[in-house]
Image 1 (cartoon, rainbow, N blue to C red):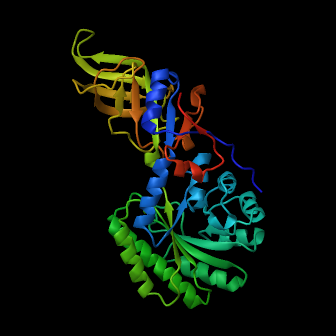
Image 2 (image 1 turned 90 degrees about the horizontal axis):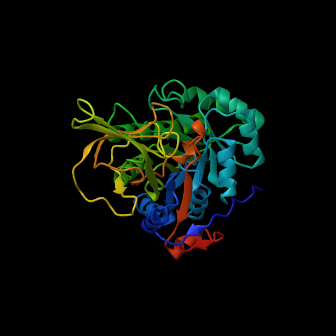
Image 3 (image 1 turned 180 degrees about the horizontal axis):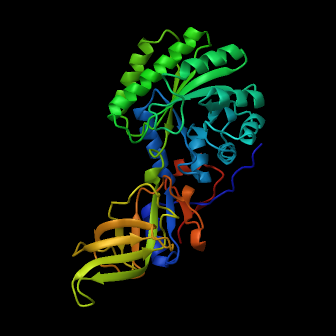
Length: 405
C-alpha cells in the first residue's frame, strides 16, 4: 500500500483573485509562482468527455505530476500511463487502483518490472520479442501491450511491416505470454497531414488486431492511442466506427492518452523583472534597438525547453496596476540562470518595463515544473492550488480549504 500524498491546502478562490493577492502583498518578488486552478481541470475533463464519449482517458504523469492534479484526475476516473517506478508510485498514492495503471515505457529496467509485479500492475508495454521475453521471465502474469510505430524516425515501436507478424507468432509459440492490447503513438511532427496520420494509425491497429486473431491469439482487449491532442473527435469517432465494421473480432476498448488537453490551461505563471538592459543604436543616446529583461524563472524552471513562447504575457506594474496599451519596443525575455541558452522569448513587442514589474503567462500547466531543476542553485518554482467551486474541492475531500485574508 502506497503512502497517501501529503495533504495540500487549496485556496477557495480563483486564479485572478490569487494573482491580485500575491501582487498586492509582494510575496513573490524574488521567486516565481505557478497558480494551479483545479476548476479548470474539471471543466477541461468535462469538455473532453463530451467530445470523446467512446474512449477511456489515461493521463501521463510526465505532463504534470503535481500530487493534487493526480488525485483530482483519479477522482474523475482517469487511468495513468506511467514510465517509471516513481510515476507508478505517484499514481498509486493518488488513489488509482493497479488496473487503472499501464507501465507504458517500452524499454524498462528489471527493477521497474518487478515493482509493477509487486504492486499488481499487470499491463506492460513492449515493442520487441526481446523485451517481451524479459518481462515474461520476471513477471509471468503480465499482460503485454504491443507498441507499433508509424514511421522509422520514432524512438519506440516495432515496425508494422516487418516485426508485428514475427512478434505475434513468438507470443503464440510461448503459450504463456498474454497480449492484451495494441499501442500506437501518433508523431507530433509528421510529413503526413493529421487526418492521414490518424487514418494510418487506425489501419495499422486494425491489421495488428486481425493478425493476432489469424495467428490464434485471444482477442485484443485494448487499442491505445497517444498523440491525438489535436485530432477532431468527430473524425476519430468515424474512423473507429469504420474499424469496428471491418473487424472479425470484438471491438477493443479505446484508450486515449491525454497529454496537454486537461492541464495546460490550468496553470498561470507569475514572474517578475529582476534586471534589464537597454540596447540603443549608435551608443547611449540613440533610439532603442532592443530591451533585454531578466525574469525570475526560465527554461530550467517553469518553461519547456522545446517550445518557444511567442504569446505576449500580461504586464502588471509593481503597484498592481495593469499596464495600458502604449508604445512598445523589440523585447527579449531571459531566464535567471547563467546559461546563454536560457531564453524565454527571443523577440516580442512589449512596453518598457521597470525592475519589479510582473509578467503573467497563462497556459503553463504542461511539461513545466515536471522538468524543472536546481541548476545554478535556483529553487524549483513554487505551486499554489486554488478551486473556487465547492464541488471541485469536494473531489479532493481531504484537502483543507484556505480563504484569502
